[in-house]
Length: 88
Image 1 (cartoon, rainbow, N blue to C red):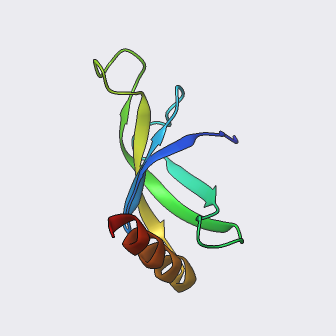
Image 2: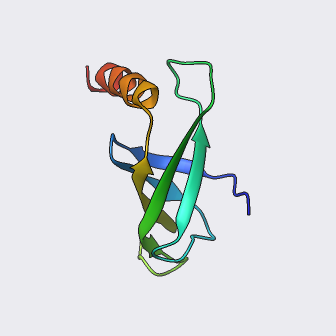
Image 3: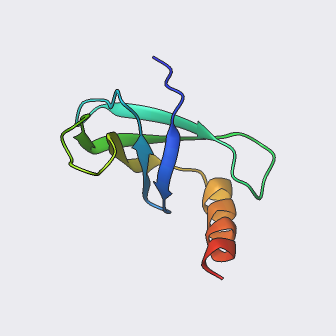
């Protein structure tokens, strides 16, 4: 299944992805993304650690939290560089 979603939160260890159709807790997800400071698509694998359905979280959007389980070193380096630009 392919979902086109908006990433609402991103860290070195995982992400919160806004979607009206979150995967079940424990499901494996492959996430493909292009960071703003790069031009190549990266793929990370993670596990859904919690989800929130539509109208389940009050004012909070539906979606799922994914903890990355398979991340390559290039992604880690590029993500750290990107996060440093956002923090500054």
